[in-house]
Length: 445
Image: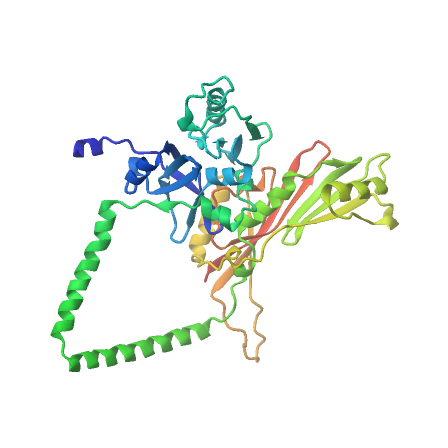
């Protein structure tokens, strides 16, 4: 028996892609099963899997297992394949970009209202294209319909994304409802060893408590209670004093987390028309209010046509400086967001030396030069009392320019204490983009 267990293959570990308080897992191992098999898998940890998601539709049941790496405490793990199912539906497939620089892509597919066992494949572009072709061949209309356990039908399959027009994976997670996120959340698998580890301390603690309770007399108990009460009051006093020392609100707690800001900007940016009735897109900027756009008039184009098409395609009014001839048309597209408290983060930030080293190293690997400027508190005028409490953090503003997409440049960066304030882009007549990204980096003193 031990020999068989030792011979089990270990499934590949999955990388967790963080977006705020959610960690999205791709590349899970999906298997169809019936209810009897489902009950037998309560403690199944095949291939070293630590997390699982079960989905059902009618009489069909599927289970996805994962072995995610580097999971931070408090991070909620969700399945990207399940998010794709919630967004697109039951008979779709598509190829999404995970990391443009490292040629990492993801093939997702759904059939019969469930994730396909042939989908959720991570690899190079050639590998995911091969996975897509296998899926299409297997689900061709002439395929045998006797494989009912895989829910194959002759229903037409719809393509949602291709490699010719790369679509970032983050678009799949934007705008999901709380109910949809709950449906994609992974559960942790328990093993007999894990249960034993929890049960043994409880058993020992209960035995010790029973023995202790029977041995101590009332006088000793009263003395210990008094000591504990005094210690609690002393600790409460220390906490109150330490709280008074730092009463300034953390500025990063009121700024959108970096993954959320990137996703909001990407959703709007991907749908922008490059030309609008002869007007050419020249500039755009993502800020917290939304995306500001500037279109430039070309020969024979009119402000009347542009104003009409801006309302039709962008849903917003256009603004012109008529005194200067109306050569520029400006549009503001507000972001569709939520005021949910779970959106904001007031995370604990690392020391300055650690934070700066991680941040600069990330961009050095990409051969990008980033200039950092520290924001100093206002100096105290000699002779006047300093009434501003000392802050326990340092703020560094930064700006850098790149021809790569912001999502690709900031992929896999540690976003603790990192906040973006602006993503601006210019588009030259040769349809080449250049991005200027601004933000702040916070670290402990």
